[in-house]
Image (cartoon, rainbow, N blue to C red):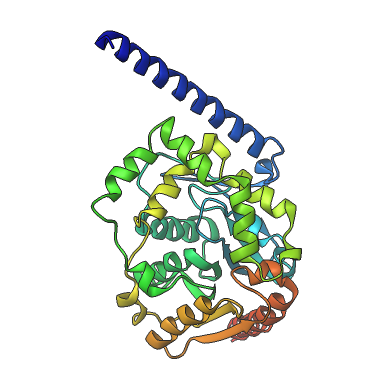
Length: 329
């Protein structure tokens, strides 16, 4: 075959393929975000130096910061079943982390230390005083590192199924930079990301890993996660790439000994990995309290919200009374 004809065919094939990918990307974004289930207009905005951060503020009392699980599916929507209960006694802040939910998704390398800086600035500039924190799974290291860097920001910590210390110690490999660059590509990278974050994949994750009882999986929760992962033309792919390739990991074992905070870990008992991970933290800090919820996996605060509230409520009220006593003195 003539060399020029071969090159022409390759060029045509490449052009058609890229066009098809681009159309697929546009359709995926439209389908995921058309209903605006996350209600972007209902959020307050913190104009942070690396991007606008969406958050909600509700209630009155001692501050409580809710931080969702760290992945592209997650957002402050995760707290919808419990935020009203806590806002009856506390000023509750629920934040969408950079690259997630309704917050901005800048093109940069997302790291553990970026989110430590975000939490530090958010607490100082928005909350304005020491706060209690309830944090879900993979966002837990950000909170612990924030405490280690500045002990004036966070008081009580409640972690839900925190990520294992062993997995957090894994660093990016030699191939990570190449794979990251591919995922950051405008059309091809977005196409790969959209394939990896299909609605069917989110549903499978909920039914196999997140929930113990598949019958409790809510279609609206699935659609909310689907929307979160595709807002802003699927620019969550930058977070996705950095998390998958280990850029957001950090070996936090060295900082655990510095912490003076009262820490509670709440786990879903029906995932053995949750128990093993919680024990790793308790081995480092024996004072950590571990409380299990039966018939729950990764999202006990969503699947068993009433039971979760009953566990956290006594802690919240006791802590509130302690603040009031100090104020009276």
